[in-house]
Image 1: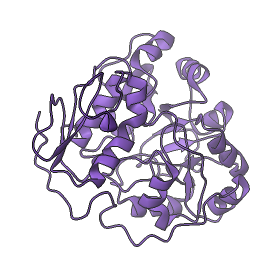
Image 2: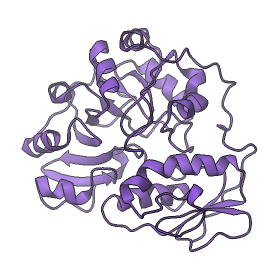
Image 3: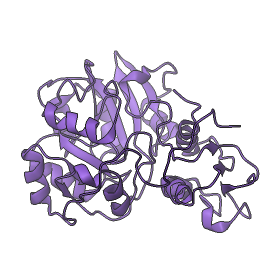
Image 4: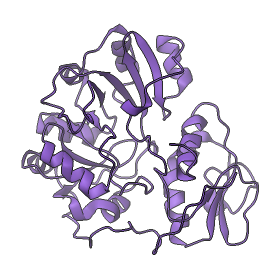
Length: 330
């Protein structure tokens, strides 16, 4: 499958159009990060999925600063990150199935979209004007510690410029949006490596809005079969060319063409240096996905080819990200 025409931008690996880096002092404490959030600043925050660029969810000016730093479309809602399920229900209205999902998967990489309860704690801009709110309790201990110290929900979309691969290391997060952050928390490499699964629990229906680390099968084991026609506009990360490097991306590739780098999957496929998983392990491939895209892009190849990835389990999320990088999904 060929990537729909996507011109290469000047420069490889860097964030196109980003202001010169003026990185914040690294290694902020939880209290320092909370103070920066309280002052209306942005903070680079580690989660188990990817690094986020965090702000007070109720501060519209701070949320606007995220959009400005990322160059992000404003119609896309953001996820409110909270310290625990009690705080989640302070901002969202949960029914029995939403509570069952929270109990099964929190803290962890599952986002629940539910009717909004408190429109002040998660402002209109953060919700893209919707009557629903996306909320999750992150699995990363530092993220929860910062949120607990701050005492209010934070929005923390991936700390990359819009359309760029999401950062899964502290260094990559600083490279992407360090110029905009008042403080930065180093939480080590992200364990999961892809964004959270997003499900909506609205009007008695549960639907998968965005595949992620928590699989469809795991969710259905808790709440039963999922609806097939969820309202995708309520989910973050649903714009075309999201998760895209500068180089054109070609998916379902069996070999590299001239000038391409092949990101292989499985034993003996391509150069092991570029493999998403030499053993064909989907969880390893998810953890490596954004890092391999970013590393390959820095080599300024003619293109990045990606081997076929099984579409089952976590492979659904990987394929979703790859299709967006290749421009197939809007």
